[in-house]
Length: 84
Image (cartoon, rainbow, N blue to C red; front, top):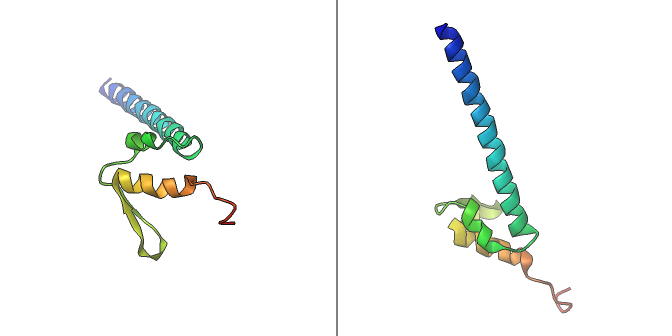
């Protein structure tokens, strides 16, 4: 009987972990869509930790929410015809 209870509790824990993982993925995907496709940089505050550090090729780093925001702003700046 104890084994069955343990097994049932273990399955519930796995089900909860899968549910939490799916929920977390949906949050990240939704916020990335807001940031990358809609240009809503305020969504960064929902998914980027204050102490986030991104290591880029060539030794470049950006830190925290503000660094992440500045990095993505560069992608959103429209190109003028003079630059092309």
